[in-house]
Image (cartoon, rainbow, N blue to C red; front, side, top):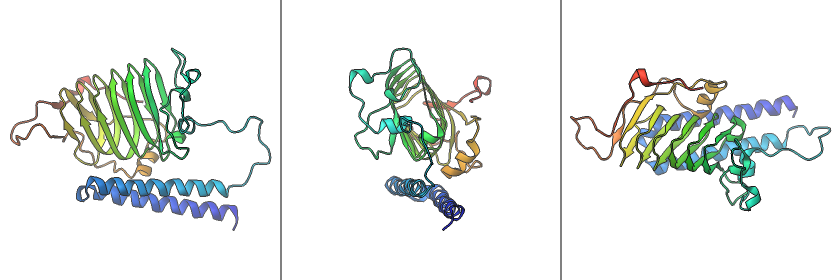
Length: 271
């Protein structure tokens, strides 16, 4: 089979998986959380397998510079980072050494943890097919401008988080005084206070044990965003950013005091 035919074959497979993602996204209201998570795992595995096979049959380069291929940030995150020499120097910006450490080489996770007053970012290539974990961050600016499978944010304070489209769920726990921009299939927020979400969500977001939560429509603009929406299977026309379920507020005729829509005059653009 010619190289062009092989690439066309893989492109067709990618389109099929994207169609599966859209079907799943459109069916979430009829499925249990476990079924959604299981289906999302399967789709993620298919994406990874396609890319691995595509890479395995790609033409080999005739030469390469010495030193080998530079590892991406998420590839580095797949190895344990435990020694003191691996710590990110104080005051430095995004670094692979500041990523969460995961035990397995084929881990689908990457992210940042235990950082203060840093600017942290991952590229679209580094995020492709990954799940992101953000943990124990204070005063940080985080940019995740790529399509991901899921995002978990735990114990963040005074942080600004700008995320690309997420094909699955975003879980936020114990965060305070943060600003978060994200497009996703599901958003669940627990134990969080005084935090604003610039949101595109295809189902009703859920909050619990929260107060001072505010929402505004997703307004991020950056190169490649439209393609990432398609890759994540998110419908641009379907957004429930101002329709949240508060599990601590059962009254249907009175608005929950735990969240509100951010006034237009206080909103800002994301890029």
